[in-house]
Image (cartoon, rainbow, N blue to C red):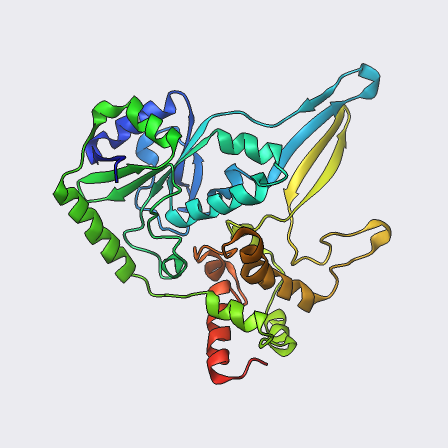
Amino acid sequence: MKNSWILDKNHLSYWLRQLRKDRELIGPLRRYNHDIVFRTVEEIHEIALDCPASLPSPKEFLFPQYERMLRAGDLSSGRRVQDLRTERPRVIFGVRACDVSAVMLLDRFFLDNSKDPYYDSRRRNTLFVSVVCNNPDPTCFCAGLQTGPYLERGFDIQLTDLGDRYFVQADSREGIRTISATGFLFNRPKKSDYDDQYEVFLSAKAHFQKIISLDGPRQAILLGRVHDEFWQGVTDRCFECGGCVYECPLCTCFTVTDRSYEDGTERIRLWDTCLFKGFTRMAGGVLPNENRILRTKRWYYHKLIHYPDLLGSFGCVGCGRCTITCPGKIDMATIATKIKGLSLNGDLG
């Protein structure tokens, strides 16, 4: 690859300090309770370079769980409506390939055809520095979906850990410009560096405990082989906690509401989920989403049928977060594997 470099690990901290001069730096930080989350980095040495792949999704920095959209002052004061969208430049360090793959799909969802101005503002001002997963988590299955553990294209900057150095690749114009601005820190890779990177890629793929394809389950559904008896069994195990939705890097359901205060009114956007009974509640209290089995089916259909039809890719990147989160064990990997097994046995409920 033309835009490739080598960064000595001793220079990583300095490079991140340079990035932080004109951007907010966000990275994986270990909190007091030992959880690792993406937060603004105040001290470079606090970045958790040994973090697992299944961190909370960085989706929240492009599509926040609670987003203030606009504010209107008291009409009597004559104040105009204030647009609250942000233009703050940011760099998010330490994301994984599956999350970059998810961002590429979110871009299409929010920016193709009708452009979402709030998402667009955040996206244009965000640079992602992703890290190849040398040791995927047991719940990861991105390799079967070609969304990780590394990417061939579509990233801003991608780092591969080679032990004492990083193999650095840039694919976007902003990524290339960012590397060029601190070019004195980087060297061009040698043949041995390419060989080591290739070995890391092979090793990473070999470490996967799950290799799952979603093509078979999709075809079984499209052919009408997955009946309501199967989905009723899935529905019965659902606690309706919303954990799968809130952890998923590709769920995009939201609601918009106005909240009034003494000095004016704010319009806010909040994450919502099609798995909840009150989703799309209509005037008069009508609940078009009342039937539980239809809500359950719709979530899987959205991921396996509608996403590929509309955006050309599954609404799942194999990050495994829903596997960790779901108390009912009806995560995407489990259900896809079950559909495949039942399909092979000719019994799909």
